[in-house]
Image (tube, rainbow over all chains, first blue to last red; front, side, top):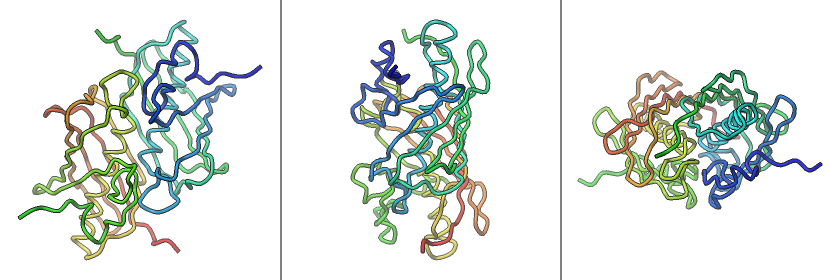
Length: 148
Length: 148
């Protein structure tokens, strides 16, 4: 059976988010899948996503990947538990940069929900290049009221 | 006297960083200036930089702005103290999202160096929209060896 990325669930395909929205043609367009308890994304940087040093991925792009992938995992976990995708926002993002992340090869994000309460999700996420962890982050997201 | 942005110092105008490099035509191209002890940047988001909710700036873009603006402040502080721009890398980034950041109006970043040792800089940075703080971050950057 072919799997569907969280972002391509018909209920959320309208998403225009620069990091994770299929409907944002200028964005990073990550695609996140569950593998058991882990939410996984493989993503190929573009050459212009580099840091100040050539062939190294920009740290802001890394932060964006960790934020959006983790929040999509939380979003889907809420939807699985409660039956609908809630409105959500990130309240806290922490990233540790462990080593330069090469820009030329596909990267992997691996996220795990470590806490899911009524309104809050805490997600840990690692970024790997060729199997080596180059950054790790913690994202805290909360349910927010729907817009007026 | 016309001021020059840190990023347009001829010694670093080669910079190809997606967040802060004048030589990256696909990047955010922030421009950072000192105002006394504060390093300040005014920046206008593009419509495609939005979050999942319309007219709100993406949190990854916010993280990228805080990272690059803070690191440019630290980079310049090292250069002023030591006489040359060192190689640097971010080791830690923390962002608190306090309120949605509107995408339509120019934003202001205000950073302050809180620690500058031989090899390490700690920078606090606020993001403001129309004078209201919508996010704040702490960036730790370190000097790294020059590439081979």
